[in-house]
Image 1 (tube, rainbow, N blue to C red):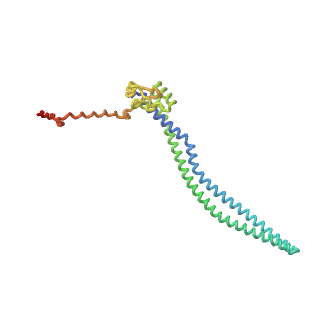
Image 2 (cartoon, rainbow, N blue to C red):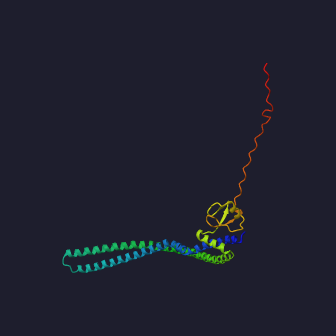
Image 3 (cartoon, one colour):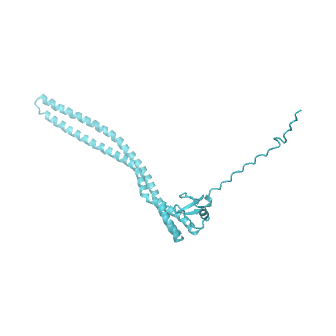
Length: 267
């Protein structure tokens, strides 16, 4: 095989792998961000549970403040009742006392309900925090794997860069310039020739070009896409078998009639 052709075939394999690894490394921040998004729902569940508990505590404090206020009113009304002069005034004060006591009872009922709710909210918080802990561990594991993969890719890229430089050094300037030019336009610069056509753009080639390509002894490019041809006989489809010959018609057998029987003469 032509020396330039052999090196260019290998060079394109290296360039493709370098491109793949470079793109993979570049996507690491996005991969990490996508992994961390898995925590969003669990974090939201924890924050929601904490907010519910905080609201519960605030409501209980408010109700406790209201109870304190009603108790102060009761003390004041009872003190005033000792100095009233009429029954109507006394009944009015007792009515206020009863109303305040009723309000205290309602507040205490609400506090009890909130305390029952708080128990459920605290359980929900513990469950959410446990789920988040498990998910964090899984996410950190995935992030670690992503970083390890990236480190491996970067090492491979360094090795491939050295291999690429060695291959390019061994190719003639004109062949290398054509390779680079086509690679920049087409993202690939080498194409297999098979069944007398370019396997990249599928344009047929002239018979003489096909014969020359099959030797792999020179740099031949596709007249349509410009890619450099190589030929691999192992990939060439087998030639079609010639059509089977039709069997010769059976000869007219004497068995049909060896001799036609003679017709007897008329009397």
